[in-house]
Length: 318
Image (cartoon, rainbow, N blue to C red; front, side, top):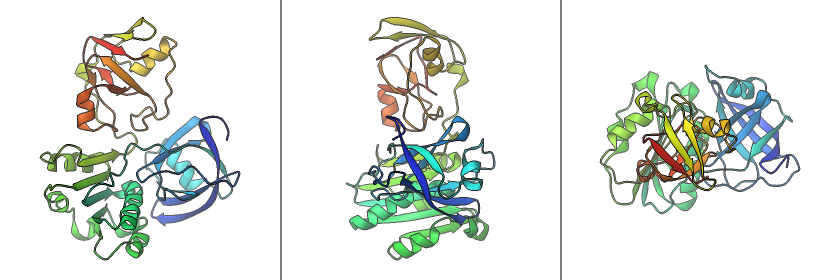
């Protein structure tokens, strides 16, 4: 351990999984098994320059972690470093696993929809469902077969007919309503990919029962900000009795930090879940990509790196 929050890992293996995609296998530097995780979990990876990025675990439950990393054309240094500069034997600090996209294993049938590198958490789910003997259909949407990372492994490991690869350059974009199908008792849908795909699936599944559709967005692809909500607000800290003023355009996290109140944070994009703070009173403009619609409607938890108040007064359990 490097400290209470991170684990020292070493790059034990790496290979090209598709155009622009590198697979990386991490082992604990001390040779011990890495902490167990469930399908849908991710880890924070600490990179040079203070960068921290989140990557899904493709093989939870195993002593090593396998990641799939796409070289993002607009990379600010994270994916570019991993794909182009990471080498065997390099050491990295990583977090213990966290899971905001957990697989509910009580379902009767499952539909998994992956867009591009969104295949990584759904790969783990497909493997888990296969081991449980559950019925599922995995739809893998890519621009071309050359970008379909891990497709061959999936085809080899999954039962016949469980995987359908949709290559846009061959047959155009699939009809999402056909892929999704109709809601039914015990039927669950999981989707991971770019915002356009998630928004389209959300629109298609509006009539599905609450909790039966779950999604995970890419980094920097959280819901757009509602600038009309960026008004001054009084922030009350219940436990300390302090009152703060949130300025327009300022995040709650920035307001807290300005007042000397420390809240742990990693991604600052509303996707890692580190900065969750309980809400006692007030209405929240939820901008995270973690909570379900029902959880946001309940309004009892906010991720202060991106979310803001909708009311003139907000009371936090701090």
